[in-house]
Length: 46
Image 1 (cartoon, helix red, strand yellow):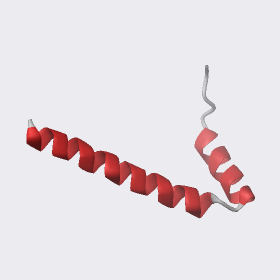
Image 2 (cartoon, rainbow, N blue to C red; image 1 turned 120 degrees about the vertical axis):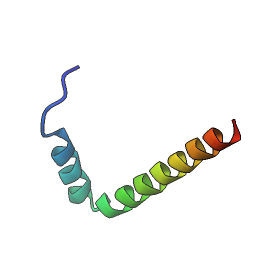
Image 3 (tube, rainbow, N blue to C red; image 1 turned 60 degrees about the vertical axis):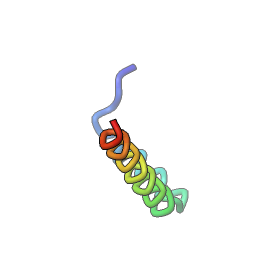
Image 4 (cartoon, one colour; image 1 turned 30 degrees about the vertical axis):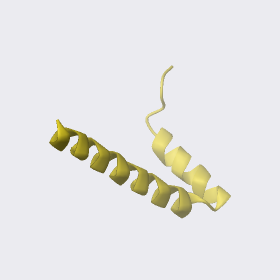
């Protein structure tokens, strides 16, 4: 499957058109931070 070069901006525009861009963006940021914390805790525990 080939991804279009501008897929991110197309997806962002879709989310904005649906009125959920900020909500989805905030949720993604929280999930990334939680994942990074989980990985760091695993690294520190062994």
